[in-house]
Amino acid sequence: MPADAGQRARFADREGFLAWAFLLPTIVYLTALVLAPFGLTVAFAFSRSTSEAPSYRFGGLRAFREIFGDHVFWRSLLDTLALTGVAIAAVVILGTVVANVLLADFRFRRTVRALVLLPWTTPVALSAISWRWLLGSPGSPVDRLLLHGDSPLARTPSAAVAVAAVQVWRLTPLAAVIVMAGLTSIPRGVWDAALLDGAGFWRRLLGVTIPLTLPVTAVAALVTAAVTFADMGVVRVLTGGGPRDSTQVLPVLAYLRGVEGGDIGTGAATALFLFPLFVAGVFVVLRVMRRGS
Image (cartoon, rainbow, N blue to C red; front, top):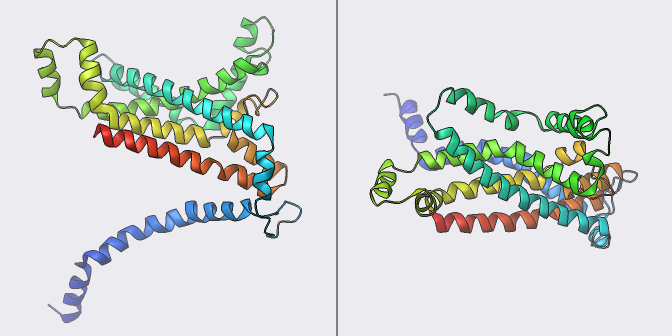
């Protein structure tokens, strides 16, 4: 073997080099699409930058004082937390039910599985536009059902319910797939032992299914929280935050303040406020996963 070939072989066998070589694309991706935008958001949150004067000027806590004194911000924060909580509960419950149904043996099971995934694979804007036409357009089925009454999107309680329903409709298929993976990983012998012990449906559910699928259920809850918490497409297209800011969420408010309003610092501070809340949620889910594993 030539000396240069042997040297290349020894170089390729170095585990440290291979580890960094395989990690490098991930590091570049995270730096370009996550760390760099996050760093810019932090910098602009402490600035006085506006669309009219985009040059960076340090502003201290000016933007945070403004958003903390804005009642729309606090209402948007409560709406965001309420929407996320409702979406997590409904998506986890419905996803578990759908997962058990899809694992049953029936005709056209593969076709039904493909159809169930359609809401998740449909683009967010297209889904929101379709639901807006269904719920809020003249001549739509809901409009005809209400005999040309007020649209559900024009009333405060029903608009919030509509936003939550669309999020649940979008995310339930993904949660069902995640829970299906957890259900199929349970050894068949565990089910057989529970049946031999005379365990009924509820005892098997509470004693076998829920404890053994708790880690994947926590993952489904985390994904639901991440998508719902950071999503602005559904609210922006479906209700625009109305009526009277009753369905406003923090991502949309950050866009309105920073982009349409021109106050880059305030918009960045509003968006940055999402980060500690999401980290706290991730910490809780990881604790649940650790207990269930």
